[in-house]
Image (tube, protein in one colour):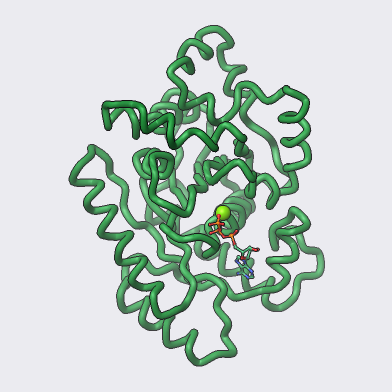
Length: 286
Ligand SMILES: Nc1ncnc2c1ncn2[C@@H]1O[C@H](COP(=O)(O)OP(=O)(O)OP(=O)(O)O)[C@@H](O)[C@H]1O
Ligand SMILES: [Mg+2]
């Protein structure tokens, strides 16, 4: 069985659309016939589970003490022993099915202290490679075509685990005067990361998000991004869409809308085109 393509949504900045992109690219890939697993490492607030309408279920498990093992357990020194004891069911326990296609490993309050706990591990390779080991040992054989990881909007030990584990980074960017600098910084950081550690991570897709096509300025920024990132720019920018935001608040992606607005339809088309291109760039089977 082929190993899944792995990508992470990451930018050292909050609110640009990392979670929205993981959810929408994940559903788009599902619609295109791929088996998809989404993993939320972005924080205990569980945004990805909320976006896919699963947060109430996840919260009930957490409040009902039925939440062990969970995603933070995977990073623990004892994880190997837990799996020895429980077998595959330890991994089954982590995975939730969603209504829109992808499977999901949701966030957990244990993610709160994870950065500090990883910081206590002396050996850098051991500190940063735990997600990679988990994916290689327990996820690669499960028949997924694509694994997408949602990361915190800051550089820490958790996001480094994400970068270590994946083939490519998706960087959702908004259009603004300083945004391009952030994407340049990310590209430089990834290059340094690669020089220091035995990983192959690269910037796979710069994904312009929340494009307001009514403004001339947005078009200008978009052009600047395309010039700066001729190889990484996404084929289709994602429009600003109140419908996308409203759907997220109800626990749905734009793909679940029965009567989508023009902007929501365009967002869907964009995510479909970008999902197809992402898999191509990362060399997955289409
Ligand atoms: N194309 C879009 N049109 C309209 N609203 C959007 C769009 N993309 C994202 N949003 C909204 O912008 C807000 C931030 O998006 P999102 O949560 O995906 O960003 P993030 O990078 O994951 O943020 P954080 O750093 O807090 O995790 C959300 O309210 C989301 O619904
Ligand atoms: Mg987020």
